[in-house]
Length: 117
Image 1: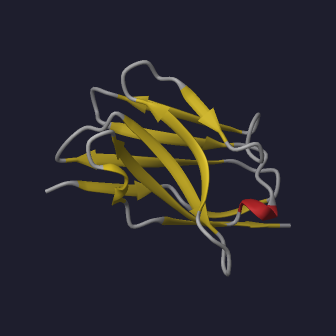
Image 2: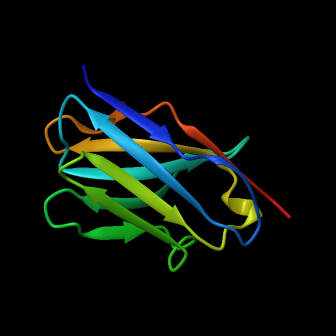
């Protein structure tokens, strides 16, 4: 059974840091992405990393503050979030992406990140 399990969310003051982790069970993917969804808003892309080369991409809103990384031996994907802002608040989801099944089939359950002033 394929599962993606996020952890590491929490409550943090603006300017602080959090590190999210996604543990992937049951298979590997060609790339992994983080998305987030704020209340009343659509889910939006945050960052992506390829499994083989570690190539990364980021949403403009998080560039320079967030870093995505992967550990292929442990099959985990992390998102280091620094200099957090109130607008970073939301549920963060891990996404496994495959060229065969596409980007939208495998998602974690999400972890809440709340940033306060």
